[in-house]
Length: 232
Image 1 (cartoon, one colour):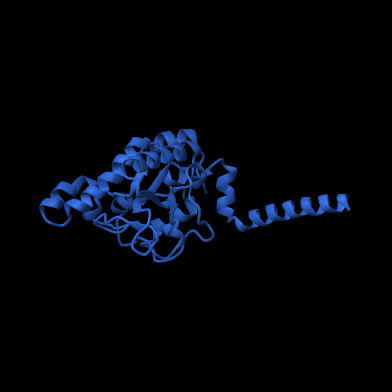
Image 2 (spheres, rainbow, N blue to C red):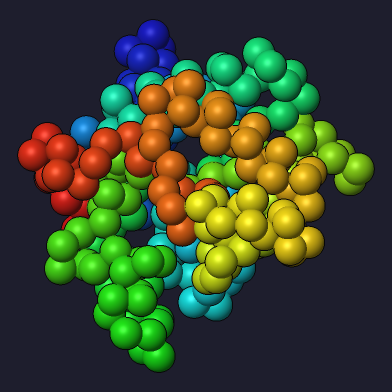
């Protein structure tokens, strides 16, 4: 009887493990195989809503399929956890909300090809050329915002940043914020909210970029290319 119980327990564990692997998408399995980690394992308080796993993105369709968890290189995930720690120390009711993290190059092509009306030079402002690879493709970049821990509906509520995620245009440019404030196109509160995000991310060791308030790099593309293999 005891041997039977042990056999049932072992079989149950193997079955559960097999089901968990089956539930993971091929992309997710490839990321794990390459050593990337789930950012919520680094810090469970980080919120995740991968926009490219929904239709709420500039493509208007799901380009990730079964991928719903945010993965990054371990060093980048550690930096993100540090940014989260800083944010909560200074704003206890706020949390980081991740919109995109490691991105397979196959999805990069989908995003690149979704902007046929823009020249390649203009396209590169918003989507990295898949032939060169995005820092996202190396698991070293993250797109995110700041959200209240609990909004009016009881669910986390993103702060007003002046534009939606993936907005293509000057309203999203950190480099133009002072000018846009003077023109009345952004409010002081919206800019203050962006500063909350940027300050936390800088404290974690990330670098912002010129054209998107939501995008931050843990490494330059050159350093990421030297240190890591691209996720295809």
